Length: 88
Image (cartoon, rainbow, N blue to C red; front, side, top):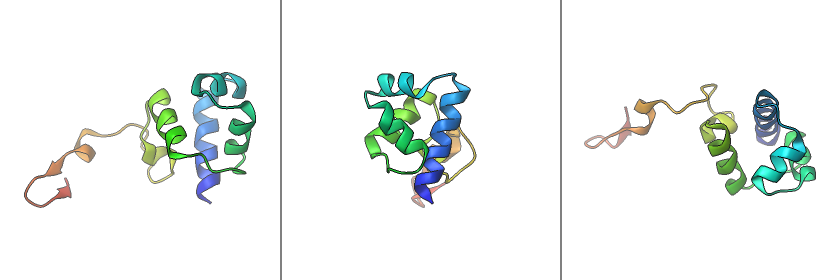
């Protein structure tokens, strides 16, 4: 499920950055219980939390949501062709 994917990605990034659930919770101003719930797929994080994680870990929100396996946003993905209104 989407909740489980977000949770896996949050846990992966947290452990890669050698943060405890408590430390991550303090940085993002949420409870450590919330981090635990998110990581275990028991609760859906809100969009503000997803964006905050994206900024903290320098990854795209699409990566957190499991829509891509590419952590960083590639320049071409952010550029729109003005005539076709499509991603290049």
